[in-house]
Every structure is written in C-alpha cells, then in structure tokens.
Image 1 (tube, rainbow, N blue to C red):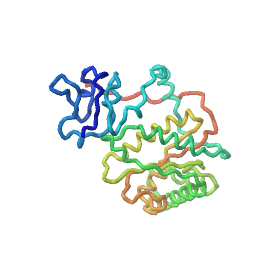
Image 2: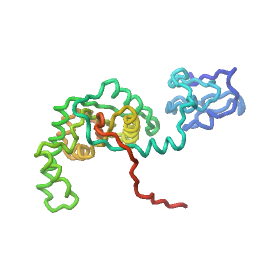
Image 3: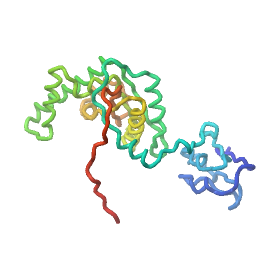
Image 4: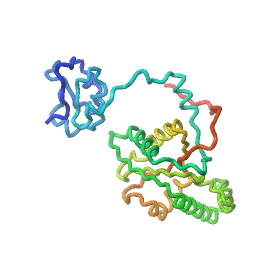
Length: 275
C-alpha cells in the first residue's frame, strides 16, 4: 500500500513533490500523470514530509506525515531580515540565574517540543531527553566534575591548557559553582553510539532550544565542563542514568536569566574563502 495519497481534484500535476523528495521515490505516473511512489519506495521513505510541505495545493497526504498534522505556514508571521539579524545576534549565554524562580515544567516541555523539529541526519530523530530539576542532583554533578578537575590538576600540573581549571576549583571551595552555575534545570540530550551523526543532531536541537528559550524569559548555557567530565569519567555518565548504548550526549543549563541585555556585542570578522 502506498504511503502517499493524492487528491486528484486538487493536484495540478506540477511535479513539485517529485523534484523535492530527498530519496527520489516519487514520480509522475506515465511521465505526466498524478504523483505516485516508485516500486519499493515505501521502504526507502525517510518520512521527512517534504512532499507534503512543498505542495501548494494541499493535494498530497502521507500516511506517516499526515496533511492534517502539518499546519500551513502563516506568511504574516515571517520575520524581516532585520528581525532575523537581531534575533540571532541578541542571543547570549546566560550564566546568572534567578535563584528563587524555578522553571515551569510546561515551559520546559514546550522548548523540547520546539527542538524536536530541528533537522536530524536522514530524519532519523534519534534523540532522547533527560531533564533534571533536582537542585541537589545538579549540585552533585557539579561536584563530581570538580573532583575530576582536581585529578587533572594533580596529574598535569604544568599543562598550560588547564590554566583556568584551578580557578574553577578554588571558586567551588569558596562556595561558588562555576561549573553548572546553580542552574535550576539541566537538560541532557543523548543519541545512540551507532549513529555517526548523533552529536551533530544534538547540537542542532540544542541550538533550537536555546534560541527559543530567550523569548520565554529564559536563558541557557552549554555545560562544556560537565560535557568533558562525561566523556572521561564513566561514573558520571552512569550516575546520570543515560541509556547504556548512548555515547553522544551534551548538557544544557536552563533557568530564568537574572539580568536583561541591552547590546549586541561585536565578534571577529569571518574568514571567508571563495572558489
């Protein structure tokens, strides 16, 4: 049974769906007829929904990417070029969170729902999400990361690459968490080890989440220190309870930003090579 169904009243036989299909499994019947899947196409379909999205007539329905679950794009909500530039340039890594304001579970869920629309290789959608809101657990993870840093300093006392690590350890000993910044939420996204694109898929999804968070009054920061500890200390990964088969992972801090921002700092000019 074909995965696609064509409304022959609406279809104009323009072939947009055949040209857009990434797997090239849709063709026009007899060269100029209505769209249909090629023999065996069902097994090769990656369920991306491009065929549904590209049809301007709403004539194509997909069994696994239904037309009625694919809302039309509202052109009135489109951002101008200036709005896009400001939206992206105004993103900040938030490291100071409001101590007395927890993040509502519904808001976290909305952010993850948005992030699930991020592209993944071959539309595999392999990601799993772990959300930690227990402040004691977050502090424990930060402490385990600091302990790993202590070992790094001891084993590599003259390594210039570790020059800022002692400051983080000293801050911890003075009662300040420079690892997870006392964030009220820690989100850890993971993907299976057999997925060669797992870390890329995670990074794109977290970028979606981070960009959306700012417009909810929330702020994010990529937890690079904990990420490194996860890579080198099996006990931390085990303590998190990540799936055993998952080797790709990355944590993100989340909370209400304590301070608003008023400027968009400059960055280095890009190095561009044209060919």
